Image 1: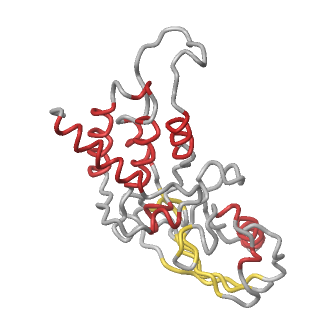
Image 2 (image 1 turned 180 degrees about the horizontal axis):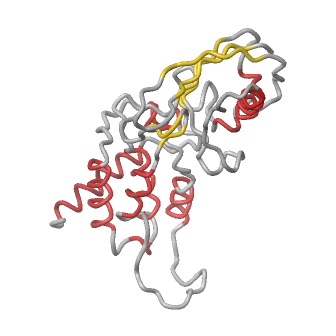
Length: 247
């Protein structure tokens, strides 16, 4: 395959960026998208040009580091992570535009790399259970109804990649926060801090500059793990309950 790549290049967080155009050929349709970028970077290195910076780690669709905007879509044309997107999803001769996550709360650090520390700070405000339980209890010591356990497992699959934010016209992280709230709220161990958790996490969400949710649904459509939109309803329900309880 021969492709034209229009890639966002930005030397650092304080310098304006721009789209640069590159031609690549001999690209196999069996390559992953990141392998294609590796091929380009090998060429740039050989030519003495600065390689394109992009995030990746596991390359197995688990860690969420690899997020890119590809032709205006979070993670590209398939509902998967960028590292699991293969070049057979594109056509010979196609022009592909590659940009970093487009969200004020995810500032660009260099080229295609963004700072997703805002997610970490939201988790620090309540995405955990801090009850002192002493020694580890037996696995069956605290019964969890199957429906609750299934729901908790389903929403715990969120990998924090940020596709929901990048896809949302408002730049909202409500799907991410809703997944974390719902995950812990379905379990008995998460009840002690349920009210303070939602208030603190939503407060940090707003402080970071994420937008508000208007239920457009682009977030769940782009989510590689299929987190359902109704976790946002659960988030709003928990927040209203916490306010009634005086938080």
